[in-house]
Image (cartoon, rainbow, N blue to C red; front, side):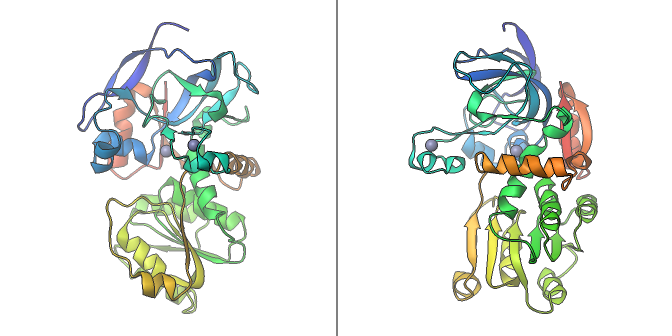
Length: 348
Ligand SMILES: [Zn+2]
Ligand SMILES: [Zn+2]
């Protein structure tokens, strides 16, 4: 397909973006061309928009380029080598484009591929009318799911990966950080039979979603002593599982302190810089299992997420608080800035 399209560019190494035009991408033999029906704004996009320390380091001088990576669209062109997909299929994108030949890829751990390229970070992304994607990264959506809902599967996938990295049935769980991922995690823990889910976040607008998605106890670390509240809520025992989704030093340290000896700590949050943790006291002597979570397992996490969508365990559509035209993208960033949004969906 030839011609021009609307696209959102990161033009310069500073805050901001440009609503402009681009050439419709030409696909390689192993790629599909996807017509974007809906694309949503992720925390990562906000880092890129604001051009914070992470974006400066991760992207640096590779501008101008088109960003965005959460998406749902329709296949409109297929390369010669594409298998298992058809024209008109509704698809989302697994954003980790793995190499296929490194140690991790060859041992079933493609999500932590050493040579990974991330869609919309290392390559041109989805804030456009069309984008090209390796066919192996296309995830076929059920056509009953509206595009504006299917685009929000990525955070659900992160939540599924984190929650089910260990057992939650019959366990007490503490979730810190109530963005779309944290709120999905609340719903998943409840669906999976968690005993008590304690959720903590500083944004009141977002706390309401956590309540709606089934949190038993809500905490605000700005106003409450999180350690005391969690211990009180668990008869002084602490929780079995702690899910760190805030990426704040205080959050991790509080969470470690309220996880009972022998418990599990799964960290999805990304921290702005190194900080102190009392490893001996909080982790070693208490036999805590601690691990990092990156992306989604390819593609077991996607199959699980699709099941939770079908069963209605996670009402993803409720998380979409705003729908704008693609050209109105800055309104989306403004709503996030005002802290009165969950998922913002853009429709070209
Ligand atoms: Zn994302
Ligand atoms: Zn690899």
